Length: 407
Image (cartoon, rainbow, N blue to C red; front, side, top):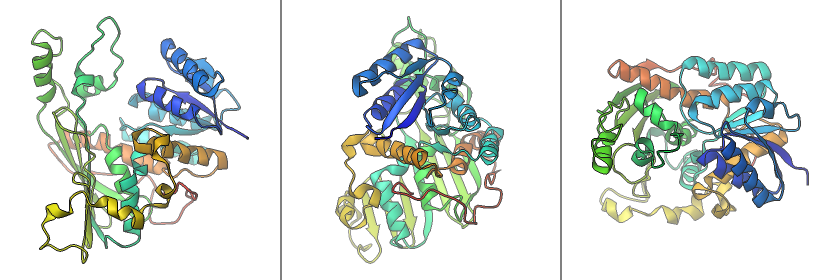
């Protein structure tokens, strides 16, 4: 079996988990792993040896990894600050790249990503695993079959209680390596927009017949982390009275060229159960993640008590399941199988030397929400124009991924 040769840069918690998952794939060979921390490198090398029976090279400088000729693609689960920079360096080295999710820091960074792709013609992909969620793909399939009629409004969120990881270092003798803490100390924005926006962007045809025109973002006050620290650690803990920049709840509204609106919510520093708050509302149907329900015009009626239809999505899988999920065993990968699918989509692109299903234009436009929301919040919720990273080709046909993992 001819194996696809891969490198991994970034071996923290997420990177280590993905490395172990990749090592379990018989047609993929991890040639090298890289992280600035040597203990992480050693752990990853040992993990690959345990899972796959061979040892990848262990490196602490990703440039050395990019100089290995046999590597065809690079997976980048580093901290947010490095995603675009490393992806650009991968393109310049002639290697496909797949970056973990996060937001951008400047619009110039997003443009640099696009310019580098257009100069090198080497694809870069955003590893947005939520695009491969079972319900997200089923709703996408239903929208394309016309079940929802015309899509009018979508919403999503990253609603995840992260207080413990953001505010506390339970091993004081070790350095704090959780890069998110610095983000919350110094920035106020939707710092993690792509889990919610990615599936919605595909449903609305963003960059493929539609585009995002403008956004407005507002922020609540920041109280959740201070309250949590005071109750858990008391007033003497170093961050107990810190004036966190990041508001507890960030709300962003996006207007699209074809008239759809999209609402995104970041909610990570207050007590709550996990939710991506995924909703799609069309002229003929609505899907609501939080009560796992579909309401279809003609099949359901406003006279029917709405709660009678809660948790009814399971009965629609047989009829509307997306082809990607029809023969898929979700036990193969993390996050309900989404991690496995998004990695396989990337590896299929690398193997066939074809475009990726989430391409550089998607990556730039979705990640730009972070820096644009930061600007809008700073101006008291002022509308901010969203760049057209396709430079006017969003309504024209262009090369795109065609294969079993197509979105």
